[in-house]
Length: 320
Image (cartoon, rainbow, N blue to C red; front, top):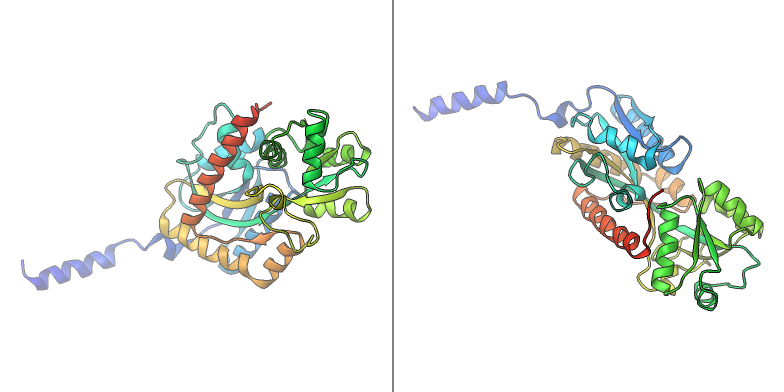
């Protein structure tokens, strides 16, 4: 066979080859499964990203709320969806917690789902009832050492990010405090204000009005460094070096989704998250855009699974 014939065959093959998935993607609507009820930060972020992608690509991107089972129902649905880029999953810290918190999952979190992009990160704020005689993390720890098990802290539920942040304070501070789980942050905050419990980690935005009114006292934020929204409130890490319990939000896709499609999603969503209007909106609520690569997000997620798995084992946390 001559080189001329080889060139001809190669040219024919090139013409006959199907287009790269990324060149034709997206050709139809995309859904982002949100394993939470409408109205929370996961839902709002999914809708924001969906709206911006719709504007950029001319294909509708919708949020599909599938709450239940501690995010397991929606996550399972996404893990078993066709790996074509038309089904995505909104994820958060709970996605990294469930492999250790739940005895059995209907999917393998690490192998059945691919990381696409981490959207944003947001610290929580440690707030306490004003009657508690402590004005810093160090004073809270001293008080807990003097009264082991007597100080109660609330959370939005067993295994919630705010619960694990509280357990991490106890572990790193070498103290015993009593965890009181609630069915959501709302009722937990109500009982904290009324003095039924002494402190909790709360999401910054809905907690700010209670801080400004003096009904709750902020003593620390859960990120490694202070947040511009509460510049005078120190980080827990200033007292407990290495402490970091920052909440995060990201997007996964079913394992096997073509790499060019994941790359296109990552590139476009990163552009959205870094745009001035989105970044300013996030920062006004105490969050910050991340927009990392799929590889960076995968490394981060695996570290989160290991980190919170260790906390769950040390604290002896058992899911309800």
